[in-house]
Image (cartoon, rainbow, N blue to C red; front, top):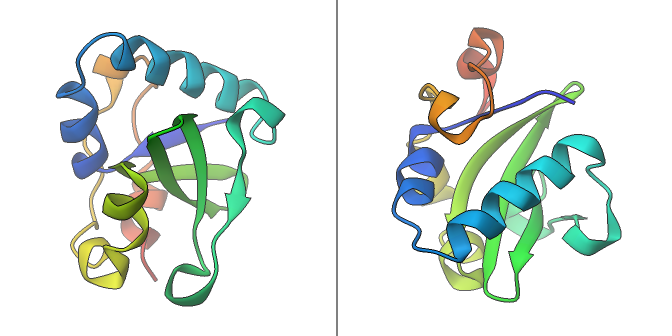
Length: 118
């Protein structure tokens, strides 16, 4: 499966300290192999975030994403409160993904970049 990431996601990922940085890379590899892997606890969100999904890196770190066809666009990274309670206001600024090669995720799709928050 292919995925790309927002500049917000990249910025937060680069700030992670060990061992969380390693755990994030492992979770992203697991997500790429099987987005529904039970260890990730992938789930669709409700309410204001019903268009989004999330998976867990560890007990306190979540990845918020949105499906664009068969590709996932990683939007945000943080604690439960940072990711879920930020709601639409935090997501409204996420429109253009950054280059994600630094995280070993390949380059972003321009199609996803232009449609990430319809």
